[in-house]
Amino acid sequence: MRSLFRLLSPTRIAAKPPSVQRDSVSLVLADGRRIDVLRVRDPRARRIKLSVDERGARLTLPLRASLAAGDRFLHAHRDWLALQLAAHACEPRHDLVRDATAALPLRGEDVPVRWADARATRVEVDAGGGLVFAAPARAGDAALRRALRDFYEAQGRADVGRWLPGHLASLPRSPRRIVFKRTSSLWGSLAPDGTLALDLALVLARPSAFEYVLVHELCHLLHADHSPRFWAAVEARFPDWREERRYFHAEGRRLKGRLRALLAG
View 1 (cartoon, rainbow, N blue to C red):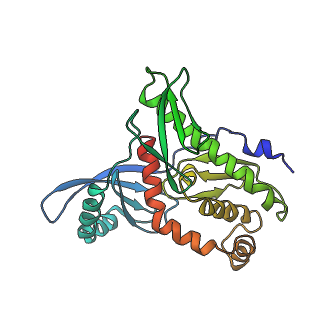
View 2 (cartoon, rainbow, N blue to C red):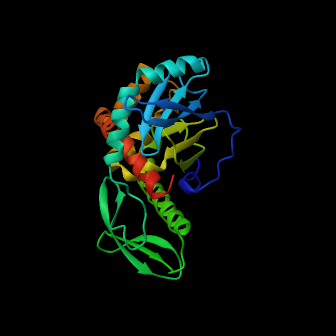
């Protein structure tokens, strides 16, 4: 069995050849406004899908769908789209701003932040459970975002390090490695080579939800599909998995959006 240290050590993921095609399409709403919709042809998509987040509207097409079918779908849902855009326009942004950001999301809570001058840029947990964001006066936005991302990944690896030993004993093998990355829709995945990928936004979620995703992906070491046998394996290891799925349905988009805002896209 691979050592826990090697599993949790940061690694670089080899870049995959681009396969997703992106362009934009213009749409006129019922009130006369013209908006640009990001159109994405994704080989992983199974159906035409329209979504909205703080970045705008996105139309996703599977490879088999024609552009004309996508346009018809977009026009048929333009009233829904207008309502969603209006709702997102009213939501507050959570950008990372030096000396102004007063709290950061971590493990399901907004944790108070104290800003401090220092030689190196870093984020630490203080003795009282709050956060200290230390940085030199010359540190730019990119350095602040990089420090926050590093902090979130370190916290995520610490959480996985606490949970993983208790789950590995009942599995036929361990993951080849564990990586954190930012994803648009998935929370986790297990690659054919055994690499277990986790969305960095999980660190913002409540810990029980994060652990459920870890267990879910570990169970794919037993069953590669989502068959009844797979769900039985999840149930045996994490009986409250349904509650955590409901949590992600209610809070998932907000968590991902908040991480994007903090790390600037």
